[in-house]
Amino acid sequence: MTDSREPNAGEILPELCDLCGAAITDQSEVYTVVRDSSAIHAHDPKLDGKRWLTACSRDHMAALVDQYKQRPFVDAELWAGKIDRAVEAHGGKISPEVLAEETRLTHSQIELGVLWQNLGALRWHQRFGKGDGPTSAE
Image (cartoon, rainbow, N blue to C red; front, top):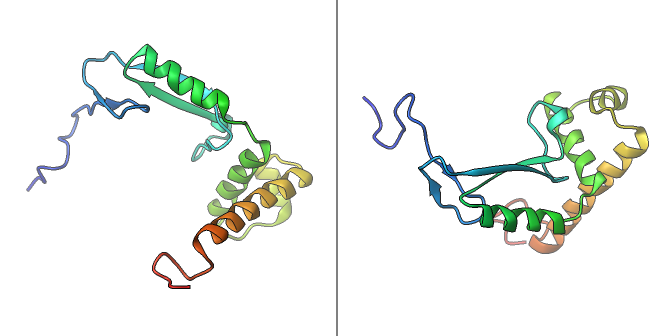
């Protein structure tokens, strides 16, 4: 039995505009790649710091590119993402030496990446509290 909500095998789903969310069904989409320190590829470090954008028109692409130009590229944010990927690949347990080797970061860059992560956690706690989860009353 086939779930009617699932696409059929081989069916090509439309692209969505990253600005307005419109489905692009006529192959008129526009693509580009922008620098983004929050973009970490799941497996390929060469693609870290690069975000693939899709838009329904050149005007929407120009607006998206402008948004990313205004966002600062923060090296420590990029390094934090590389650290997260390596730590997750090792089930949460990784030696400092292996971490440096796999991320190709210096120990100073690793320290700054960890500081970036800690600042993010601190901001989260300040905003949402220090409870045990989303339903916590603390």
